[in-house]
Figure 1 (cartoon, rainbow, N blue to C red):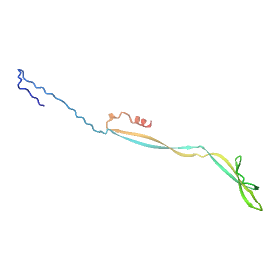
Figure 2: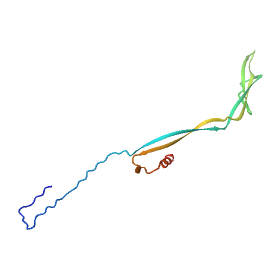
Figure 3: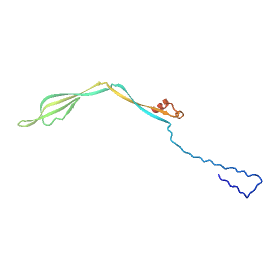
Figure 4: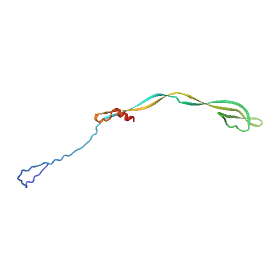
Amino acid sequence: MNSTVDESITCAAPLTVIPVIEEQLEISKRVVETGVVRITKHVDERRQIIDEPLTRDDVEVVRVRVDRVVDQPVAVRTEGDLTIISVHEEVTLVTKQLVVTEEIHIRKKTSEFRLPIDVGLRRESISIEETSSDARLDSKSASDRQLDAQR
């Protein structure tokens, strides 16, 4: 600090010099690792028997000999749960006639049964492990963090 005194002024009292001081602040920041977080995922599988009713349709096919002369093809017809499909054949005679040679009778039978199946069901859970170099920074316990993760 420089101070100058005017020598042309003379006083009877001795001259007192008061220094003026100024402080300056220098700010910097740095990254500090305060801890490590480890997340682990677990998959649990449990066995469960599933027993649901299933349906199965079985058909019974019967060939019935008919040998009936018809003028035109006979359409497929249904009588109750029986479906009848006519099989046609042209037979050469002096005249040509359409003859039903057989019918196929199809009857549908529906039955219900149970077939237990053992299947695996999976469920995931998460655990969080946090290690901190400064215990004051850790405001939640491990059990509180695990509850938060499951929510």
